[in-house]
Length: 365
Image (cartoon, rainbow, N blue to C red; front, side, top):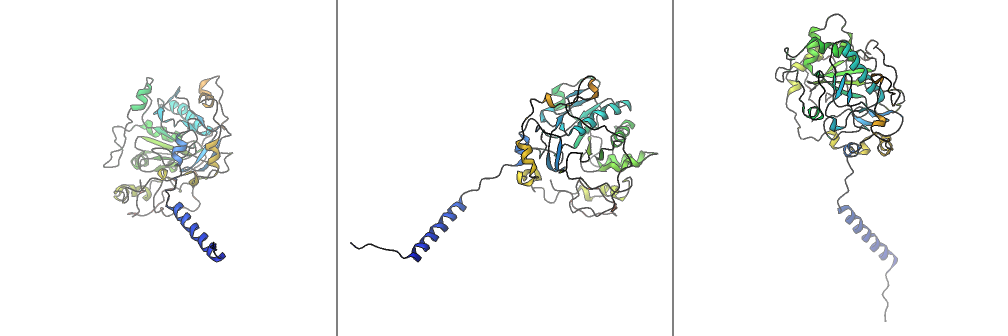
């Protein structure tokens, strides 16, 4: 019986051919999609039990050691509590509580607190692009009622829209000097780097504020923000991986950079309305590497164990140490002065002084 043999080169060719077929078969299989970061962070109900630390940038990051503001305070109530976005860096939570006291002394009945952050930050399932590192907070421009709101009311109560969507101007019948005092008080804290408001609100302030106008530098116009204002504080000590935002431009902002908002350009329809939002694309690979450890970090014993009870609660002891808040020194000016507006205007850069018209696209999504 004759035995068939195959030469070495032939065997190598056969092996190579089989390898190519195998690789081709593997490539034909559908790839397993990486989980979106918004789903992973959105599923966390409690913060990572660790020292307070913000990681990354306001719109791409996370934070550890977060604490919650109580649902009810002497001069505040948390709105939309089912979202579980009442978490922040201890300095942010302490600042909100301080603002509620100081604003009450100025005549504001109390704060209705909107979204701060998810327990561990990160991209949100819905809504904000920022609010990811525990250093952003929304405060309604509707004063707290003189009665305690039920949980149902907090979920469903509508905020008061202060700006006419056609003229982009404040509705004078709804605006009061108390709104100005509230925004001025919020801007007075050194920790606050900027406050985002609707362009109509910025214009109202520019038109009416007399005397000291230095604080207006911190008031930055941006789309939306017609029923609330957005407080942003700077990177805090103990957060070496926090990425700071550029400084605001010099001046009070009541110039051509504001006038641009009252041209047609900012309000033209989005040229690419179907472009996915950043949160719908971000995976863990998109975030700073340290965010994986934040995501995997241990839970505290309970939400109550990491709720920040500050001096409003008398004998209550804060669960985390926050630095003493101070009055603001003059707002920092950009060393480079007015820069060109980025190709896609965004809330994370100062709106510069630029002539009109300013043919720039509005941000997608």
